[in-house]
Length: 177
Image (tube, rainbow, N blue to C red; front, side, top):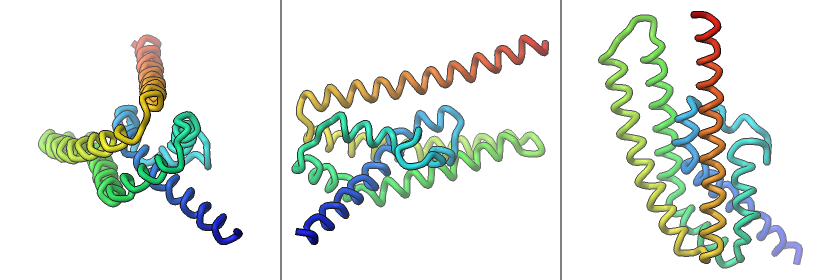
């Protein structure tokens, strides 16, 4: 009995890690749009980052054990590619920001970095779509609806955060112009 509990705990941990990678990939576009590079993982377990989104999805979707296993298999089969693509995009964004904020203006360097970022983001987006499509087949209509609601809430939060940033910049400009 103790051995089976240990196995179940390990499987749950693996599922959470793999789902975290997926959610990182799924959330990366919005996160990158907000100007981030690596800060997403600064929060603790079940804090304000990927971990809390993952927990919210897992809890609110009420996945059956069979669904968890199917989704874990989908994520596991795509996990290495997701990690690689996410790492590329993060590195690309870092390079792009360095080109933008370089000591001297270099349009060619900015364009090259922006192009590479776009190419790698496209690859990541295609992989995300493939994984998302595969997961959709596992979910019930109610779970799909719940997932869509959760994703809409996340998109609204990103839009609100971007609007806050814009408002702060506008306020600063009005105070200093």
